[in-house]
Length: 417
Image (cartoon, rainbow, N blue to C red; front, side):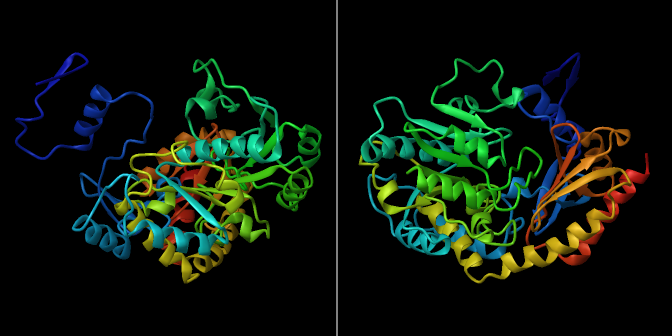
């Protein structure tokens, strides 16, 4: 017997199947209220399609914030997980395992880097990059003890750990979680002159999202990332690119920095690296930079575990063919071409690259959340951010017909007001 508000719901003794409302009530009663999900209770999924507990089908255009770049339950990735489950799942890094080395070798080749430090979540990868860059600053650049500074951008999102929220300017992520850690300087995103002015002898790194995801798929001005690379190289400062959302095929290249012809010193990867099956992340980059970390200085019980390595290696294999990057480019042209037609018809602006779009909703349409709710009624799952912006990130296995279906649903949702 569960007490939910003033009501009592007998779930265990319920004779029929539980409904969406039942599961939502359980979540609300027992779960921490750190999310405000849309009222959809997923029960199964395959490819781009999600089925709820009542059997309704939805086209998933959030794709786990790019964690599901290859769709739900991609058969090759599921097969890799099943095969590894029957062999070995965890050793900790106290021992070697036969899956990690091949995974790291091929991930380095895919990303054009020299060394890999595996972790689990995206936030862990960012925390790892921060530690590496500080150690490099003290041990290689010669920055005085405890003086290292990292330059970040306004509007950035790199996770929600206490270190990372210390340099967030999103009040929802930051407020009431102090005291905040020092060592970070914020400059406007896309403003290379402001970045140049902020660089000094204590600066060890610049941490930038090549495209800002949580901020609303904000694409920087042309040439900005190349100028970040030029400025950091000239100042002997590391360039860290957070490609956790933008990387691994999303924008039409393996990495967004690759798409614009820039090679950072460190790159953080996550989300899609785990194939939508379990968390896998990594910092990849220069050997002489990652090499400053010595045994005992950083680690994770599950980082580099055999199961994650097997799945991550299968993800790398999918991307090695170039098929998914090409699909993102081709279908991205279709998606953005159709979305541009909505500007002036309930939409004020569209941004993005590949199969990734930020859509600013006109105020008379209501909030981005309201539009997402109308899309749910039309069989499409999407997510809002910052009030008026809708994000679309369909899996890279989406078909052209399904892209048209998504935009048709959005157009209908906008004209229904």
